[in-house]
Image (cartoon, rainbow, N blue to C red; front, side):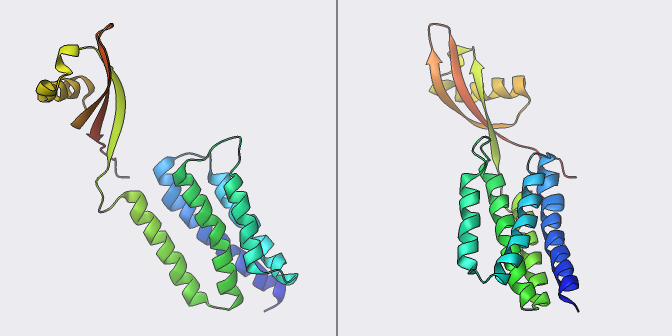
Length: 194
């Protein structure tokens, strides 16, 4: 196989593995286009750069350090949440893994590695084996229920008014002047399976 066709094959294998992670694991959870371009763009450019860096004999450590600096900078104008930073780091490291394995013709190991990465990310995104709670801050006006002795009544009133299944409540601030309190409710988030 000529070098050109080998390069195209490697490029499409890398892009396909990144596309599967972004389209079928990340995107169904967020339904946002905000980071899709960033993830796939970074992955594609890094893979291409690794191919060219190998041809000019730079070490992989120098290349990975360069991309680590880019990920630390993380687009200063728009802070990226930690979940998206995790995806970005993974999609930055993926082309390096793909390049090394493809250059060694380790197709079976590459397939297994990609499958394991996808399975782990899917497992973590779906939250299988975990039971997470969400929280909301609420300004509450029934000041007489904001008392340690009235915890059950407070939770019952908040559940009736919000429709949430509340597990516990933290009282953050009490304003006796206005007869209000800032409370944080912790509730079980019901996920719609798609």
